[in-house]
Image (cartoon, one colour):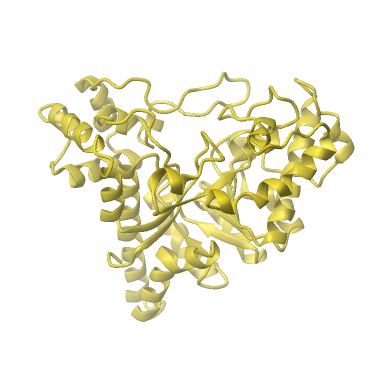
Length: 406
């Protein structure tokens, strides 16, 4: 497992706004940070600013709130272990946290450090979702290791220039950056294929639907008359907003199928009342030519997701994040996935992190978990060692290479 180069299908790596971040910032800008506060708003809540809000060194009380107060949380354990391995310490303590902070700042001030960490993790290629700037060419910004996907959330919020997704992005502003200025709802829909035509020049290899953080994932069949009611209204009725997003997502999925362009889709958690996998079944069923990569094992509804993947053969499974949330749930779901999925091409993984240190921990953790699970299945007689080795290479590398045509 350690010798197989990884094609990492999901990160949030973007150029750092502030170079030389320290220990507190690394903890806050990670899933360890989610133990302190949920970094996205629920309906009727004001917008939130995820990540770190300061560049100063953390006090021990601040660091201890993670490594002691939440020290048994799986995501915290993963990151602490990664930091200890990368920076050569046995643990993070009151006695060494200041020295560790200085070393993290020193290494992160070196532009080559992140690339070194990614290489030490064995990550050959990484596909990033730069949600802060969906049109960012991540390969140009961060190097040859990277490709990216286009997050489509802003396009589902394009009925008015003041409409915003949960990241503060707007569809009309995005189109304007591409030289497109639709004057009607019909022209807006006609602009969507022109957006997809520009993806190769931006080194984008697919679409990303993260609307589970903005609304329910029950994307109904297009209702153009209702969707049109939202156009140019700063606060249209809820049913018009939903219909607008439904039409945009449905059109993009159809266009993606015509272009053989993969569509990543976040399922589970997020706005949890509306993120169950079966809510997206209608969209997937309407677009049998479109290849959907359904993400995060749809935690906590992994069984529901695998049931869909058994029925719909245009579904692939992204294991990303699920083992950081709960290694226990991952162990059970992974074994079930191996048994249920129709062929060995269906699983792939990524780090789903904001910085290289957490990506290192996530990928190292995935290698260990998957190796242990496959070894256990071999010892139980489920299949032979050569079968386990073949499947491991596919999950870590080959499946993503074929799926994204890298």
